[in-house]
Length: 474
Image: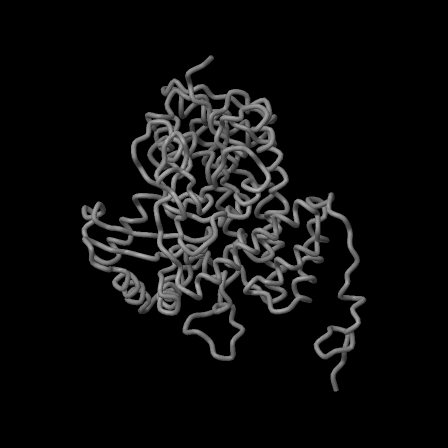
């Protein structure tokens, strides 16, 4: 039996992870000499990433494998990274544009709202199928989910699979996240060992609940620094980045904790949708930049072609790419170097000195938490409690994800309507029903196995009330 660790990347053609995984097996000491198995159902993408990997990792003693059959790749796997999304930009555009048509501005559109729900509908069945195959073929392997919506997918794996699993998001990569806050308030990053920072929450809706530097509360300093940087703040030109300093400062004042993933969090609350008679000092959210994402994707594939052909030196690849959150996590699990990471997992740690990470959320709440990490997996640090207001919103977001997974498992569109109806950005049940029906129709090729249902809105007994699209008001 080989002593080499085997890392399987399902969705190796993902440009947000595939290239970084290749760089990591060429550079990280715990990953050099492993077996890297690249899996993708797109033969062209798989061929290109395999060629790049063989060139980039040629001097690392790493064994490069590739296949379009994930079950073949799973044999002997130690880590199985899920990083796929079929026709992501195509479907994301549909979901965000239909949402905007009915008054929902999704600046990211991969976690919550109609786009988040339908992303889960399209991808979770494949995730669960792979997890069940892991149980059968390599039951000791860790399944590391990198597919959005991270919390919903993690909940689904927690509820419906026996595979060892957790989910990742690269927003809170350590130690960079801590360093960024120290720099924000003008403190020396060498003080990082004395900076006690506690962040928790549902993925993309995370909040800093505590920040102490040498025992001094610096949470107000962090909040005030965002207000400082919001003065004269310019539109950064892409949806997730627009006016984040202002939004962070304002939400910090209102909720008593600092949002730490504002580019996503601002689409979880109704304040920045532009609906109120009294407008904020910043413009409403803009919709996710699908055109820019597609242009970036095309540009990166051209770069990969150049590395393979030799038009660009492979040394440029090694100098321009760096390790990724997931590969750093795997490195720590192999070499046990003591690094901590933010990882999505259940709130409760059942080890001897464990317990709840967030005191006032249930044990099975699926949260993003700073964790100790070794070969046995992630164990969360204590994070404290959510203040009222934020606590209720955490429950609400968790309920949306839980309902989404339940609906997928039961193929129940009424549960989807419930999930979308309680979304903070949806202001009527009719809107939720219409959005779901319209997106189902536009994405029928991807959702062919869902049962057809009649449009109940057309047959509703209240068809004559004010506001119904068929009624003329005089």
